[in-house]
Length: 75
Image (cartoon, rainbow, N blue to C red; front, side, top):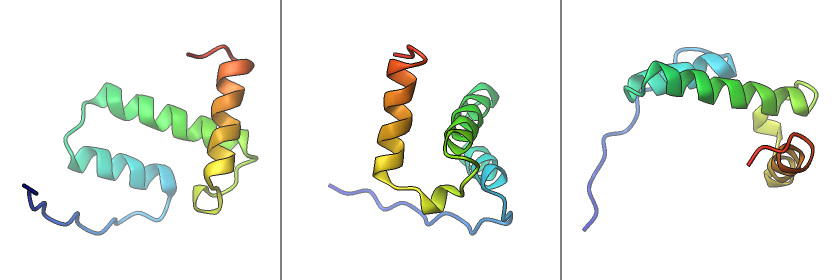
């Protein structure tokens, strides 16, 4: 049985990290969760030369995760 969910309100900010924070706060996630998400999204963006995440695809995600696992030894 599917549960209907209300659509999310439109985002007010144009900056990616501000949009992320706005959405996390709307969903009532903890402050530490917000900080962790922002940290990893910022690291992902910097890894790819400050390119906008909308221009990045699955191959870029895979490259970032491989770098984390192999070079940074993050599990």
